[in-house]
Image 1 (cartoon, rainbow, N blue to C red):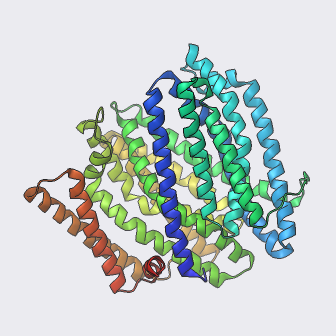
Image 2: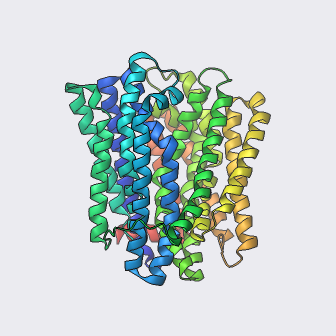
Image 3: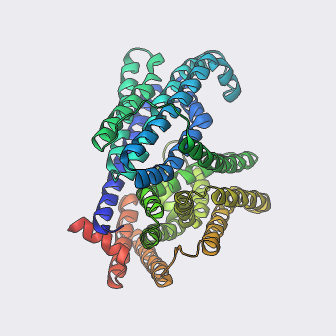
Length: 507
């Protein structure tokens, strides 16, 4: 991170563009709900889109993740020409895998529907089977687009991959509108066409960034290396899915609404991390991979330290805010229509307990990428596996006394344990890597977060008692006060990472 200010500036742009992408997704869901409500058509559409991702999405994400370290080694040691050749080999591999998957999805769509949507029957099952024939085809575009996203990010182009996602959402929205006046059988083509547009856009930009395709289907040593790395990453992603599945299974035995409350609470957590931490880690991953390839441990440590501190600056005040304002946030976002005060109470308590682990969810995302950049995919899997076992044990211990809140609390504790294991492993096995060089900064962040959120809560209560206004304004004013206090404190003690962001924004 030698050019820290431009990096911070790019981060702010990425957050803004990601927010727009999330908003487009929200508009897409609103349009779908407007024309099709909660009908069997939507059930079939949602299931047909979910099944390919459940079965194969993790495979393609794992390959794209494993691609970056191998690409870095080839590019830095053998040059751009060899790196382009390797990228083409991986694209050809993805093409073959996607083609086989697409064929199986088309031929066995009825059987896939019967297995994964066993509750569907009649027209719903038939429509799901028809949609699956189409949705399995979009894997061909999304798998290659995901790899080119990784290529662009390594080359330092972080905004184009986000913008590429706009094309996918716009394509889906367009087809929803067309299907509403023609036939719902066209719905699934929205995902297919949107994915194709996304691939065309990112491929065009990759070409401008220096990539050119080479017709090479050889499965040489680099491809074998990437597959060896991808398998553990794939297993790790499915371990997390198993964890989520166990939580939902146990919650299904609790009173009605428990599963939904956990789901809605986690959606809010992932919204926070998706707009901030995920963007940051996306930027950091190719940079630390390149630094490790070049054995630049000073640069490697610098990037990780700055990334860790920025994660703390973002997530710790959010975590405090969730602990104090969980009821108010859930009420404002969800409480309307069928989502009554009882649903708010269930969801806000789950949100509260998930919020305890927010910083550690984010830290795990960064630390896993640190290991991947060092070509070590075994350690994150071992730690994830242990944390899942801990989570399940805690689930069984806490569910009787705390209900669905115990499941959320267990998830947070497991995330904390996972972070501690990863940090200890780095400290013992990789002493050259320094993650937390300044305990003073973390202490400051904790104190300032508590001060700003505590003051905001006092102002919130005072406003409620003395002034009438829409409830969203109470929370908005309180949040602005918290932000001003927090930012002022960080500025006064000269926290470097905070200054980088502010200076890049107003330079």
